[in-house]
Image (cartoon, rainbow, N blue to C red; front, side, top):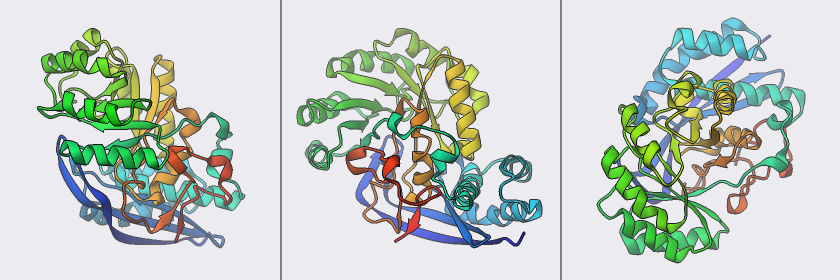
Length: 345
């Protein structure tokens, strides 16, 4: 079978500067991968994160080796073999491997003429809404961002914390959005003792859960917080692949997977099943990404309890359309094209 592959690098500005406990972004870079076979073109993308040791440069550097694996296997439908061989060829660089994984899943669903969720046999009616993230900012600006999110129909908000004014931040968002479902994400910013104290205070604001309160390098600290927290705890940076699930199962309530940290759609589904087997709820999050990759994550939504797939919604403009997501409602049933739904505007 004849395969053609291509790589394109994009710089995408954000609608607002986006700040978390680790720093601020004004734009993101995506590396788009296409794989063409039988007149169909599969689209995927990497949204690399420096926190996991990846940049657009590193993605571009390893993609030739990863795409060579696809060409050597020769059958783009041999997803298990290709992803295994890619892991053997490039052990790290999960975002780069993910770009290829997404492109191949998109291609296979297009060749079969179905949306990806139907290829997996999933029910679009079981899809939870996506949260919309309110980044750290001065209080007036956070108030404004929250009001904009509500005007756009978002009913689930994720609030970034990890500062010396976390209660003020959460109080401000809750005042503007008294009826919204709300949770907070500390991005590893707190010590265990600090986390317990802050969570006890923030619990008064009717929060759904707290995401990654302590550094991933402190599993004992995560257990300390989980055992004492009045709110459920979600593990993000502490959980990379399915093999991490058993180690965090007794120190969190929600497993948060991301395509860009686990390396692909097959591994993402393994994380879901492993988490369920350990009695955990499941969320799929994202980096700040293009619809070229977010669209694929949306097809996992019927398997989830929580979705945090607003990465493309935070962009000033994307060059790809994806799954319809008005007000955070992931509408897979409205998707009128096969594959992931990612299509160039």
